[in-house]
Amino acid sequence: MVVSPLSNARFPVPLEWGGVPPGPEAVPAARWLVGTIVREWGVPLSADAFGDVELCASEVIANALLHTGERCVVTVLQCAGRLRVEVADRCPALPRREREAEDTGGRGLVLVEALAGSWGWFPAGAGKVVWFEFAEQCEAPCPTYGWGTALGLVVA
Image (cartoon, rainbow, N blue to C red; front, top):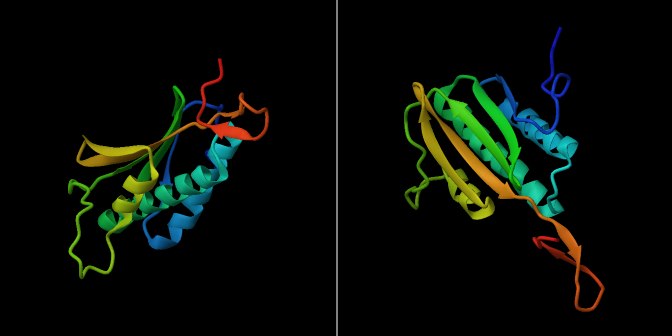
């Protein structure tokens, strides 16, 4: 019997799964699952931000799989107006976002830094956890003229 993280999850609590197998073919399925979790939770994000979350998840998961050749653990959390995705691997090498100009790859963390509200890493066991966060985006009617919406406003 295959158990999906969605089949036994209670939303919106932290959701973690370790079923991301090694290899680049696993990245699209993991990206889809992160996106599905965010949709199920109803996290208030614009369509652009939602796409950025999926793209950042792809980059961080791909890095973990590429550099370890092993499974990684993905955790999705929603807390205090923020969506956080963490990817744990068993590689002790620190994430690097600096690359040489002639390198043909390795710019995923530069992309994550540009798109996410914040990102970072911390040591965990024999490896590390790389994480990124996006702020929830509340929409509110524009108060001055009564038309359109404003993103990111706190509505009292």
